[in-house]
Length: 466
Image (cartoon, rainbow, N blue to C red; front, side):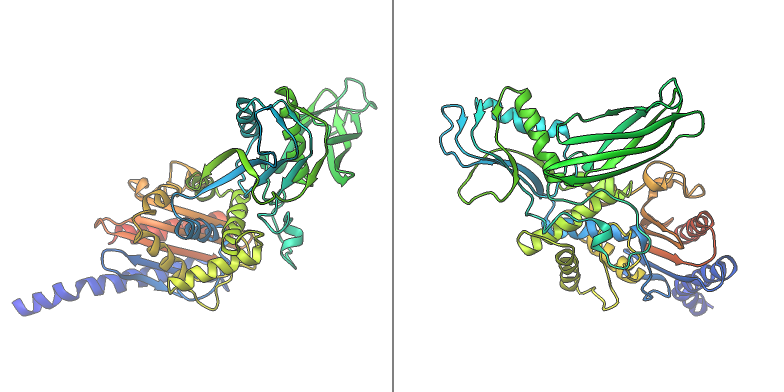
């Protein structure tokens, strides 16, 4: 009898694990639409073994769980203390007279968080040097990235994409501006247009008309002779207003013009031109601002910020290539890093940093292996873990996992595209074991909200029964 009891105790965890996986399979069979592709991988950090593996090696479209590779590789390859700098240089080595006899150079390294206030801080450091005049030109150096990237030109045959402002080494105010259209109190008259950033760089052509019907406006823009023309057309309802977002065509010229405006507002004389170029060797850096890499994590992982993700993707590529980075360099950098961890697989494909592209492909097992590598790296794990969304609390999981108690024992990243619902992260099981999971559904029929509920149900089942 004692021998039999011992056998039951020894083999109970195996029986329990097998039955748990079978329960998950039965739920999938009952709840997933037919012809759906699905994959689930769950790993126990305590047992150092897999708890659930259902189609773990199928390469599926990941949607925004793709961002976990972007942020994770950035942290591990660039280091937790890495900063992204935006800098001002000059080619005058004697500033004691308060005059820059030569050019002023603005150089960016892909920081997407830079705002007008940051530019003011850059200029404030020049004011403290008693700079009163610049005799040369403003040279904008955006060569840290190979070129300014527009998604519709970047990814060939991309049928479904999310519009994004251009991705550039010099980025200011998310490479976007807002304008407000105000309807007249008389029909037939043009609406009034107010730009939130009054710069000589912009020329507004107003083709709007006030009407009693619905507001229906459109915007087009073009770049010519170092200026940007914005054409606003359509109808604006009488005595109403509408706010429109405009993506900047040429961020480097926008940044240069904004810098000139702030310089002049602070009493610095400048009458030169704004040009593109490169900072010469042996130039002196006279002002800079730095953004820690950690500040990128929460906007990307909690809130799924695509714009930040694509910049970080190219930052990875540019550091890998030694500057002049491209999307190809970024993909190669990530592939190379995964190979160094011995978790790269031939079916792995990552063409962007955000997961917007449907050309991204990888398996849930590869993602779980990668998340385990982050878990095993104490220098970055806490920051990475805390950058993930908390159910019922914040980010993209703020209204999910209503049956998981306490909800903060899970940290995750969601992914959603048409026909794609994915989720990955960490959850603490009832036993105290930290589990690493990834679950992905690719389907032709189905409702994304029901898919999310199904994923929540499965992960809760696993966490509550281990």
